[in-house]
Each structure stands twice: as structure tokens, then as C-alpha cells.
Amino acid sequence: MNTIFYFFIYQISRLPLSVLYLFSDFLFFLLYRVIGYRRNVIRTNLKKSFPEKSEKEIIDIHKKFYANFCDYLIETLKSFSISQEELDKRFTYSNLEVFNEIKSEKRNTMMMCGHIFNWEWFIGTVKSLPALETAAVYHKIRNPFWNKKINDMRARFGTKAIDMKDVLRFMMKAPNDGNLTYLFVADQSPKKSAVHYFIDFLSQRTPVFNGFDKIAQRKEMGVVYCKTEKIKRGYYHTTFIRLQPEGDKFAENEIVHQFFNHLEETIKEHPDNWLWSHKRWKYANL
Image 1 (cartoon, rainbow, N blue to C red):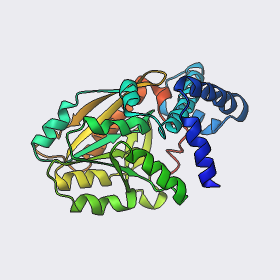
Image 2: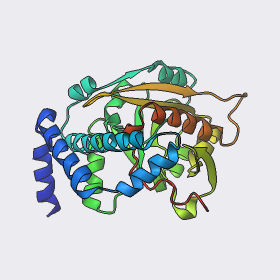
Image 3: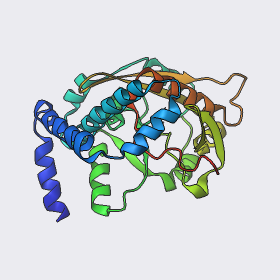
């Protein structure tokens, strides 16, 4: 059944994006007008994150979020068949020089981004990076078939997928010689058992992962924030910003705070482009 469904999905992904966006429009109608997908979660997250905004502004962000979210789903579907050439037209970058700078220091690089649409299209970044190998850190999908298909999709562009459970061991064993770049989508909500550190983020007490901070410091890696903006439908641009310590070296959890400060600024510029349907603050009161 999985194989048949994948064949069907793959054939759909080969359609031009101009056609696929018609599916996105229909999906938007279903999620926003009919189903109200996670409506209460989204509205609550927005109100708590932007207490200064009016009800009208919150509703406007909410509606635009659904449109961007539906585009993201369709664009992720397109990732199964999209070419490098088309990705290069639709996803552009600036300040790539920071990667050459870090490589010249013989350090590996940790790229950090949030759930800003469309993070899946980062798969096309690899050819622009000076490192010999790029690894994307991911949470394993329970269905083995789809876990493999999604990892194969990323591997088409030269990205190696590493399960979050294995990343610490992998990174600690790898030489810190400038030949490895890691991509973290670093704003996930930790599981209840993994909540150890809190920050102030989007007007709320927020539990965060801080393991990447410990790894980056121990291995003395270069750290880069990926600021992604949606230029227009189907087109994105990422500016790479190197995180620098205030002193000679990063203090404990300084990378965590710098990353989330940058991410908060990015979200506030275009709040409809972040994943508000995520139950981000369900463990905020622990």
C-alpha cells in the first residue's frame, strides 16, 4: 500500500508548481474555512506571542499562516521530484562568505534555522557550501517506508540525514576540520523528560533544547543562523549570519539565546511565516 501511495504522490509532485498551487488553494479552503485545523492552538499561540496586537491583526496573521502552511505542504511534496536548477531559481542566498571563513579556520559548521517556511527547501543549499559533507539532523518518522523516502529525497541533493538520537555520537567522533556542515531545525519543543532549560521567547517562558549549545562549544564549531524570508509565492531568500561570542569564547547557553533572539526578530518581521500550529508551549509551566 505504501509503495502504491508513494507512486501516486511522486507523479503528482512532477506537476508544475503553478498547478500544484491550485491544490494549495483548495487545501487552504478546507483547513481554514471548513476544518479549522488547530484553530484554537494557532489563535492562542498568536495572542500570547503578540499581546500588543489587535484582534483584527491576529486574525489576519492567522489567515496568512494557513496560506503559507498549505504552500509549504505542497512545496514539500514537490521536493520529491524538484530539480537543482529549479531550486536555485526559487531559493537564493546571501552572505555565503561566512562558510568559507569558518572553513578557513578549520572548524565544522552548525547551521541553525527555525520552522520558517520553507525549511525543507534547504536541501538545495549543499552545492553552495564549501564543506565536503552536509548532514541534516531530523526526528525519525515511525513509518520505516516514509522515513526512508523522505531521507532519500534529501539525499538526492547531497545531504546526509542523521537521526537526532545519533547526532551527539556522530558529531563527537567526527574531526573538527572544516569538512562537515550540520543543519539543525533548532526551535522544536523538547519532550517533557528533556525539559532542562527555559528562555524568554515571544513574550513567554519557553522550554528549549540546549544540547546543540554544548556540542558547538565543546567542539569549537562555527555557528551560523539562517534567516529565511518568503519573497513571494514559491520564492525564498536566506541570509546567513555568523553567531559570535561576546567574549573570547561562547558562555554557557549563549548560542541558545543568540539563536532565539535572531529567530524572534525574523518571526516578528513576518509572523505568518512560522509554524504556529505547533504546540510549542505545552510544557512552559513545568
